Length: 281
Length: 295
Image (cartoon, rainbow over all chains, first blue to last red; front, side):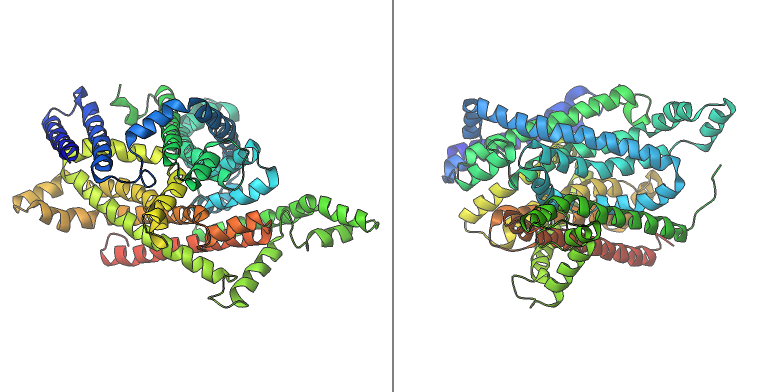
């Protein structure tokens, strides 16, 4: 019981520190601490709750057990990571984003396609596309190729819509200027349209990162070889060894955040000129 | 330059022609994909197939690799009209289960999202300590949690709608938080100052200024949240076993190789998503018109 009260005390004091930090000047570098303190107190309360109220590890394992499992089963986790993230999610992500980008170029060139394809693309982006997972697993087999195909379709539509929208963002006055420079179609595309579209393209790329991981993991629920994060999660959950499940989820969370973070870094590097990026310089 | 303003009607012809091309491609691919099986059958019966025979064979298989649109439509018609609604073979039965899970999770997620947004707008300590975690929570492939939540809550004695609704909630609260924070912050300095001159309390500012002003953002995030809730419900059904629902129907179709079940489930999910989003759109139109936020 004492642990539980102590953890609550830690949470309260961390909260007071956060309130104090919140009152400080908004531009200092303190803002990194509140989320860390908040996360730490959540983990402490979680650990203490399980310790004091004797929650069965079948329902929720304590963070310490998850951490131990994470360290002790490194090779299995690594094999699953390679199977799901590198082979399944990453290949599908690259292929889906690239093909959406190419189709967006074609759509931008022909107004007829834009008016015909865009409403359908918008409609598809709101659909539960994950439902095609069983179909694609049936077509491409249990290997990573089917996961890659699911991811391709999932990232395709958000990427297409964002890119097409971004290509329309160039001002009339800019395209007129390109015209007076006698710019060719390629020059106009590379120097004006794709450049102004970059913030939107990155928006699509960022949405795609989470969708890619979700697609690769869920597709494994419909059949996979004996490795992979989705396979491990569903089999270990059925065997009630939840510490392994949570270890996989931790790996998934870390790789998801890293994946997102890498895209954000690229965004800062490429769209340094955009107003939304200036404050952080 | 093509600067002519296009009316809504001018979209109809392009959309229909693109759809027609998709349907034609679909029929073509179902010939190509189903051909190996048809040839195999013909070989066993030691007959050779002419092209028209091949086409008619590939378009009428019982377990095709790619069913044709009319086969899917036929299956959907048979399983909605010719079955009792309470029967497990009825598509209406499964759609209803998925629908109720989606609505439950959507309701929980929207409430959580609005409460969080209000806390974030009113309390800077909450904003800077919780907001980064909310964003991180979405970079986690949360659907991976689905089997675990279902198993854990099941062993704790909760089964049925609740575990799946929780997964739906987790997916749908995020667009609501983000949209509502934006919406609640949308009143301008001038309007906030005006409230101050009336010495309005925090809750009065919330109810009379911030909430009404956030309505356009609210409906946009409702649409996103609804789509996310449906995905959560479908994926949540996968590990839950015999419960029923569209996700369950697709999974059982996949294990028994019954492709028509998968495709009809997929299309019912699409119809369900579209009608829910259109429904929100209609309410949005009515309410925003009444509030004179949109003409």
